[in-house]
Length: 93
Image 1: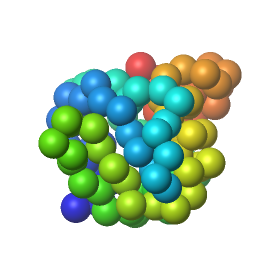
Image 2 (image 1 turned 45 degrees about the horizontal axis):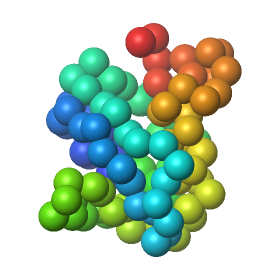
Image 3 (image 1 turned 180 degrees about the horizontal axis):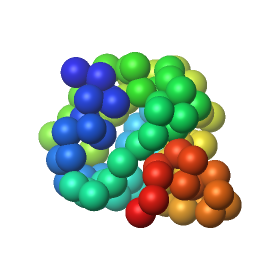
C-alpha cells in the first residue's frame, strides 16, 4: 500500500514517522475525521505515492528519500502552517 492509501483508510494514528531515514520533527495525529485534499496530495505527491512499513514499535517508515518534503508534511499536519494553507491541504477540519 501507498502512504495515501493509509491516510484515506481513516485508520486512527498517533505515531512518529521516519522518512528518508530521518525521524520527523512532529508526530502524525490522524483520525477518522482527518482528510487530505487533491491539492495536498499533489503538493506532497512523492510522499503520498511512497510505500510504507509499520515498525514493531508502531512508528511508520515511509520509503521516500525526500526527508525535507516529509518534514514539510509533518509540520503542516501538526498545524505549523497558516490557516489558509492548512485548509487547502487538509480541507475544513
